[in-house]
Length: 401
Image 1 (cartoon, one colour):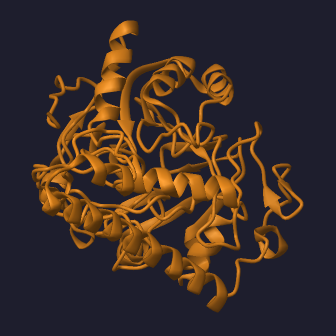
Image 2 (cartoon, rainbow, N blue to C red):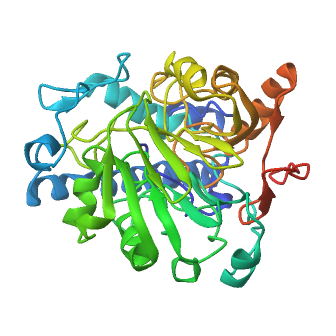
């Protein structure tokens, strides 16, 4: 992922043209020498943050043992999706080489929206354990990015928990949260299961996993991701790994691993060594789809035909870009995926928390609402920490405006 500017004061963003040009061109047109120096410092800061993250990843790759093929030692049958030492998408997805990577880096350095991060604090709804425990069944709270707490069948379920300040391998660089979390890890109630979509840092945070482990009954993950958890010290008895189309039942919730179009990896040496997935959650009164990360593909239609209709779809809408169209959806594609799934209500996730692309932080919300209006799709956009009644949700507000 590109580096993040969330820790950069808004006053350093001087250019309000979303197509920010290289410094050599800007210097010819900006008459204020102070403005030129300030813009130069902004670009330099971006470079330092990005370089720091890359160096950290390189050090991790060279000093730590690369993750072995998860199928070499795991206690499950070989996967049809695993060939030649890697997992594969049903439809080919994003690959990059040095030239393309360099071009993407230059775009990030020079073309980033001046509104990539909020210019004022985002107000969140504080949460506490007592209010969660007494909340009615069929409730939902969005904690940030793709982290969602659900109360279904009388138990709590948590998706892709990331409660740290940064989505990064190191605490000093990388994408920084736009806002505080509405609840701390130690204040969460007992969690029946954590459901993981893949191993990228903005979805699988080691610090959060270790902090909540004592109160989690089980971790449900795609193939190979569970191996990471065990390596971190999570008891193997708590970890369950599934391939696409495999399922498990925990208490009254049926959990099905379904395909996604994405990739995996946490260093320079382990790309696609673990599987990625979307998830179908079937409770006695509700059916929910959790999309994780995915580019648009015909898998949504297949999932909808097999398990739809869904009362709620939680689908990514954020961190998209023309340079990686097959691994993240545009907001318009997210609406189409919802329709393919035969969803009733759509809650866009993977936005409003980390700076992971070039678009403004509010653009995903505006575009998905505009597209959804065309189809009469009901979109839920709760504040972080706000309770949503999944049976009868209150109208959402445009809190980001």
